[in-house]
Image 1 (cartoon, rainbow, N blue to C red):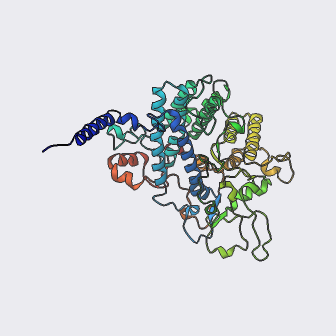
Image 2: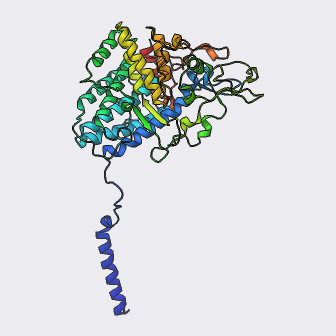
Image 3: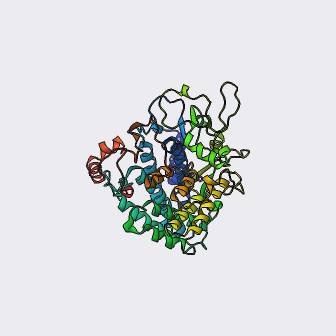
Length: 488
């Protein structure tokens, strides 16, 4: 058989072309818009936004119901506002936190490789933030062996709460010492502090104060002495001193700072504000009411009748209420530059730091300092939500009996309850630590006992049975009312 000259040349040309394409294939097909390796900054914003957004949703789903802020209405029976907690209530929390803890671990590793102290410190802070919430939701959880699937650890051991808190507090102290405020953050711009290292350092120490206070019942740890040392040395331990320092995401509605609520209308559908939540705000004549709640109405005339909620855990039919109750304000979950109520994801407010200081000063019987911190905390909370602090808030004869500092922990913690509005699970954790504020136990509340934790997910019991059983035995059970180490 004979081949034509043209065909032979075509074969030779095709072969040369194929060899050429193979030689430069990787170079030609490399996407210039994709990064070859992640940096600490690549992971930072997704971690902050996704965890903060999820926490905001869970504050609405869990904390609002348990802490008598908002409840489903009408609600004939059951529900978290009646302390009826489903077995799977914590599944999303478990899965979401471990997902992002894996990312935080990666962020820390990349910051170590790049030799960047500031990103290492931030990663340690984010790790403490998420793990503290996780352990306070469940009790003993895997930490040291967690997120190590790549290393073949598929059935991690559970660490005790005491071990976890010891590790987290130590890591926050290390983070404080790692920060180099003179060194710029170069891996992109973070969405919370816009690369302000000093503010990140303040968040680290403020968070450490939160975690220390959680352990206040463990008298052998001298928690208040440790807190006193931090308060007395602001140079070494800078903390929040103004609202602008707070760990808060200001949501603009523009990606990536969009609202976690896909449909803001769901926030207010079939809901009512709780009576307990509004009663104290009414007693305070508080400017936050208009930011948090709508006015109740007379159903016959549609006339407004002030702020009136529904008792959390009520029994019987809703026909017993002869008014349309106050609801939550939809603007709280609607990101808009035109709104007078800011939409914010609050990780840790400045007001919380002042209430921690107020409690510490009260413990040391420094009533003047405690009063000053108490008043600063209230003012910070009011202004955080875009309201104006009344000049006579603590002196008005009609409200001073409910608002003026009176040297009691109850008064401090009632105001802290409002300062922790929409802050993940924090007011629930604080209630379990102190039993304050004193919540009414209405006739429809199941078992009359506040849940103290989520039960471990069924998947954990099924896939990690040996370590799960050890954790249950160590904690004394896997019930919603099983108390945790720091509660005892």
